[in-house]
Image (spheres, rainbow, N blue to C red):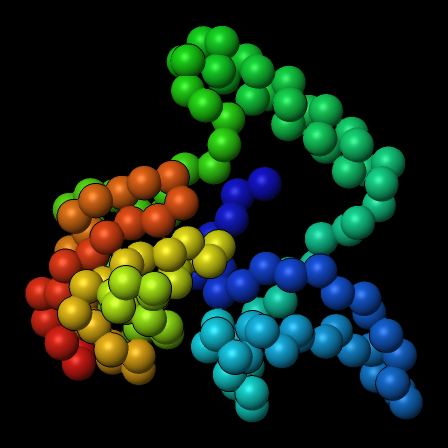
Length: 143
């Protein structure tokens, strides 16, 4: 399954019945981290949690990953959604333990932005990419 670069958040939720509507609740953390805003409209994709389908899909995925790693030697874990030298527009959501700004992009991937403050919207150039985070240097403030 291909995941869009426009993915804002990913979570599991039950579909419930409320009066004459079916409801999918968005977890509070998604609102608090700024991934989604109350009152806005979003496209929603629902993926079945059917264990039989999941197992079949997982088996196919494992077979595909094994054949890809055998042929290319590449790891089967997800690749970072950014590349070194790439330019991104991000909003700083938090401050890390060492005082650097923290922004999140696709799938919650973290970009560390030195010298940034919470709430700043900045244009950054990615200078370093690791499997679970990247570092971005500010090239334009308050875009």
